[in-house]
Amino acid sequence: MNALIVATIVALFAANVSARRLCDKRVIAGADTVCVCNATYCDDMPALPTPTKGVATVFESNKGGDRFVESRLDF
Image (cartoon, rainbow, N blue to C red; front, top):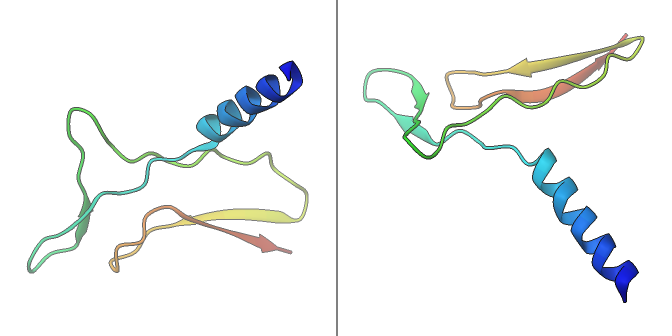
């Protein structure tokens, strides 16, 4: 029983540490999509992965509303 409690706490902690706050998107007429922040919430940048030889990590934002979308390039 104790092992189950410990495993649950560890899993919840790991999920919380890796959780990312996403963009609260707002479209402004005649302009771009923006991320809205307030006193209690703001999006954040994902954690940077450890560099790996032959791999580039790309974070991309665009006018379509995507913010910090992560992808990998192998070379």
